[in-house]
Image (cartoon, rainbow, N blue to C red; front, side, top):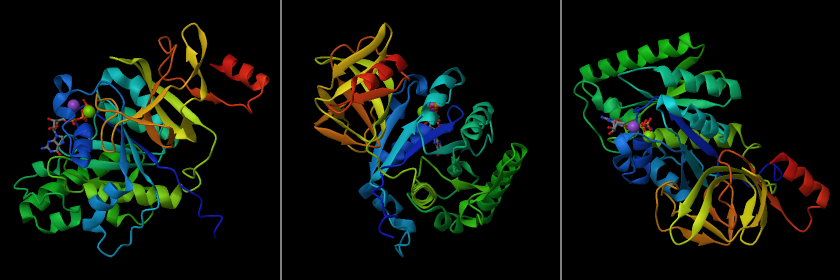
Length: 345
Ligand code: GTP
Ligand code: MG
Ligand code: NA
């Protein structure tokens, strides 16, 4: 039994879906931030990353976990936000390639839309497990908000016509998912987690259903993906963005999916004119519950362990290529392995 209790890393959860279904707003609700308000035209144009520590998960799931049945074993959750606008399918591909599990966000009034279908086909191709957040439940006729409540407590509290409207809209989505080849059920009625997609009703405006959503993601990753999310020392790391930071220089924002990065380590990256070999000068992270893509007071770290979104400062990063892997070289890496890495990048 002891061997099975491996150290877990934070699972990586990607948020996907059609434009304006409320992906960023859901994260804003979880973080208590206003990132969405600051976006040009209210449209996300980059991949984001936010670390949700276990303390925040515990706090947010408390209302649905009075009996303490949900045991939090993960050190947190790394949530990847993606754009839903049709022109960013490359970023949806990149975001989803990094994740262990996904939340597909659907607007309850609109049902499945074009980029919902596109996202489903990406998830199918990669065999990525996912849950569906049926978002904006607060728009159902005569909905009485119950801030930050678990969905079931809130639903019980609704008048008949609000419940009826919700049921009608949710049934439509179940039918549309069936057309895509998926059985789906409200998560608490789902008897077969392996064959049936779980639906979680949410509101990014009122916070209803968000405890359920976080609880479900933690439960699914801990229960079904323990091997995949066990901590390993081999570094797996992908470049999200190459960015100039005033007063510092060119940096790369990366997702560290496995292993640890350390200040002073030698890294090899893919550059436009061939491999870049350089040394990590600074490992910068936003505070927990803050978005990596939003400029903030980054905190410098000596060591960072997966999974995390990290900003790396080093020399020669100007020609680094987003979307490519980053490799670590140490004293034990022999020349032939370095050659091999440099040929790869
Ligand atoms: P893209 O990243 O551009 O694809 O959009 P998104 O999916 O991140 O949606 P976003 O968070 O930008 O929200 C789109 C609009 O829907 C905003 O005006 C939000 O205020 C609104 N919205 C999001 N969630 C909810 C919700 O639960 N209820 C209501 N009433 N409005 C919501
Ligand atoms: Mg967004
Ligand atoms: Na939007």
